[in-house]
Image (cartoon, rainbow, N blue to C red):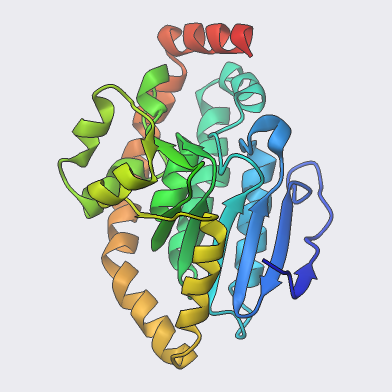
Length: 267
């Protein structure tokens, strides 16, 4: 799909990293590309802050009818454990600050955006990446795309909304996904109500969906967004503090640290 124009994110700093992001303007769609294939688009805290800042900026553009999130290679393989493990070792206060200030703030920003969010999953969406996709209003899964809850494999829980997002889609779905932690491809995701399968690149279908949104008045579109997410915004504010407590307890456990040691040894 041709790119009609491009946007260059602001330069990175020590605490905010935009360098892993590309923004491509295709008609009324702002396509945000996660471009860190060597780490399967996993997010460190500075990268989560960079994505937050970028989305906040995009949300102020009145000419945009929707935001597409996609990745070069993987969609997003979760949090970058190479960056997160040292923070865990600093103690619970440091971990709370990072999870709350970087990752949970990103999820709050997503649900506050005034335009529809569309996930284009053309690779792996695991753990935090799964939560990112679930936070979107629409999800397209291409032939190479797949989803996995992922958190429970390492003995962790999603402090970024995953359980809540699944509950909104289908209350019993969490327990099915925890049973076996199978890769969920496009047709399976469609059957479960998690998204729409595509025969071609998911990003193409996502851009077409956003283009269709542009046919209605922008004020009307924003009112639909507000109504569709009103309950989610309220529920997320109740969910996040409780999830943060659980996640900090999980990530500082000896079982989780043993898992990360095995994970890094295999990487």
